[in-house]
Image (cartoon, rainbow, N blue to C red):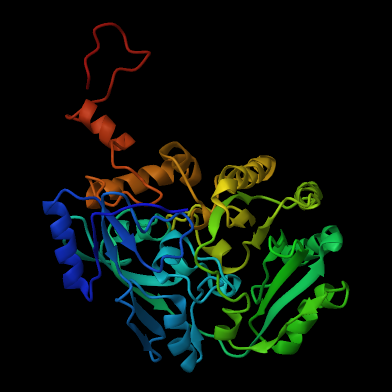
Length: 443
């Protein structure tokens, strides 16, 4: 669905090449798009009339087993990190597909199989190297450019080209993983049991549920992924309600390593048409499930809805510690629509949008930006919340005041409230108040 035409594509080998590309863009007055893994559904990695900085040749990963850290090039995929990390029995939370780009997932959040145990991907980011719009190379961490470091963790690609990421790694050995499939007619019971289980789940258990109808076969299924980090027998006991209490038609849950877990759903083929839309939620009541199931009772409704619990480690990070705007939510629900025919675009886009609107009674804030196909400036302020959005805009003003990096969920530079007050009152005087007597001067 992405048909855009840049002026130039630059494929840098190192940070100096990135600097040169940005200097060229600045001299030519070209906006810049950045391609990391290219997995993002919104297609932000390419822009009309832009210079595209394509980082696919910058995929070097260095794992330090002593410090339990890894530094990854900006074009790295998760499979580039997962494999060398697992050689040392280490990993960091990285989504649910090995071919996802490290950059996009990290900058927008990072919900995956290890999230309840070890946090969002961005919670494990220790530092980053960023080339800014003016070609400067800056480091971002808790100690250096801490405002930029805060903004990178949830604010997306608004602030520069991130040429490397340094992550904290965790011990991850043999785990219990796989997926369970159930008949669509059992959806109400399965989703209810799954929700009740995940409402009290320990950090060791990650599980995402899906209800969907396959476009090729017409078959409808309910699915639950399983990832248990810990003793295998304890894991089997923890999911017994899903395996023994229900009747899965497929049970692939077994002992496996993390790299295998990252591939339980295969790979998403190139060339499909995608539109995704969803909301962060406070609860998953039976009414919501009934509304969802009713949609898939219609044979012409394809695609699927993904339900993700947000529990464990991410909930123990203060909501203002990073720019990520989903800490207060308990669940995430997203309609993932995939089709092949351009003639169906209008209908299939509306199917996803309509489902997302139907979640409004239970929503909190906006939706997960890594899954969002489109946003506007107005919706972004809602997504982030006014205070967080203003803080992000202040960082944008500092590092990209001309909005060179605009092909993203864009936080356009502009006046923040503090800036507006300062410009209106440059001497810092107190403005007149309603109760001041006539003739009172600014003081």
